[in-house]
Length: 292
Image 1 (cartoon, rainbow, N blue to C red):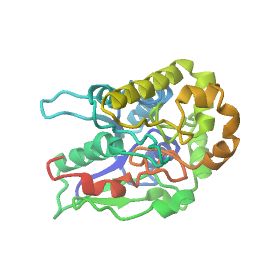
Image 2: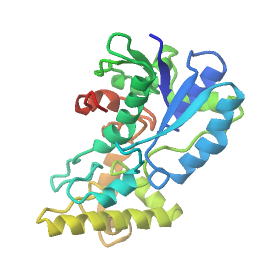
Image 3: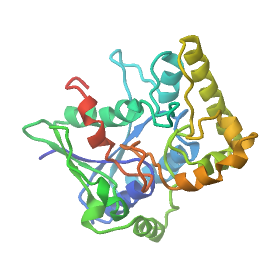
């Protein structure tokens, strides 16, 4: 098993694993960050990556590599760009009229396939599979499952060391580093109502862009004769949910959602837990072809 890398999502668990590798407590030299797009990720995640994580990795002789989705012609594309380019399919799990999440190919296309392709190009094969480290802590042990990709084997160093998310935060702080912010796309439909309200209060420009995205998608759906979809389970336009006449109705929904959803480097599964788990590798593996 010659190829070994850690799937780095930019959140707490991934950063803790980078610290553990720097301390020679886990055996990983290569960390792969699949960037969905500077226009899609939370800006603070990208700042942390470039100002804290990458310099820290370099100081300790580790490789933290930033990857991007690449088309067959060699050009790159961000998730934000694809959402605006594609009229019929929606790559993020917006809510249908039933309240259920819709398609979530964002994880497969912009995270899993990108890392999977890198591993295959580095030499991982079915006969000699590579090892991918995944940042799942003991708080979310239910997500620890074997890979369904024949050329990859999942490894869970935090589980092996019996570390919780709080343990990860302490590891990072004890290394003299700031604890990273939650990592996800700023317009992720798995945000809680509480997170949408935080975005409205603290990052109004990103909130306005999310409102505009939802509106643009539904204008296209209306032109195609399709029902609207929403960025929250309240099944109302985002601006109404957070700052409109319906916000008083959301206390029960907000409490029910609190901590329910998360999205990390390989997961947008709608489960609870930390922001940095990776079992989307398992969930979406069957969608990946041998040509990825």
